[in-house]
Length: 149
Image (cartoon, rainbow, N blue to C red; front, side, top):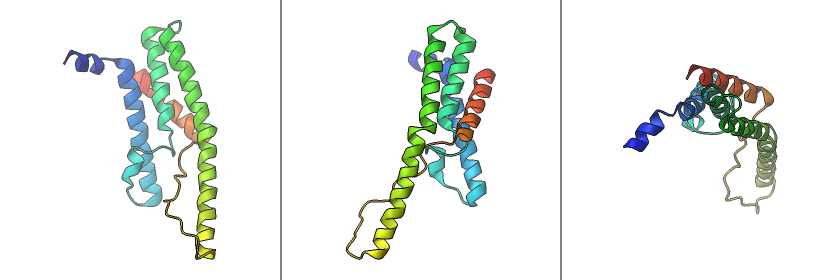
């Protein structure tokens, strides 16, 4: 029980989780507004506006800054990890989504034009990365959450 109490009193962890959860909720609401339907996958899925990965690591880094100080190893680690995660979201993961979109289009063309082409695979997930704007808003949300927590 002491471990649970310790986890629940860890402000850095709480800030990170609240940053992630708030981004996922905002993302789901935006998706509902745009598509006029509720997609429960948006509550936990990657991709979309704002970036929950960015909110997660930004809230953690800001919380480390505020609770441990700018000279602390904890802040240095959180800052570097945040940078890597946000860079990756805009780079590799975004390119992966673009490739998945193209492969899904090619699979559809083959399915329609070639009767012998049987694709038992489901369509690849296209929404895995983020635009720089999505990452920026996720980062700003994380900074706000980190300060508030």
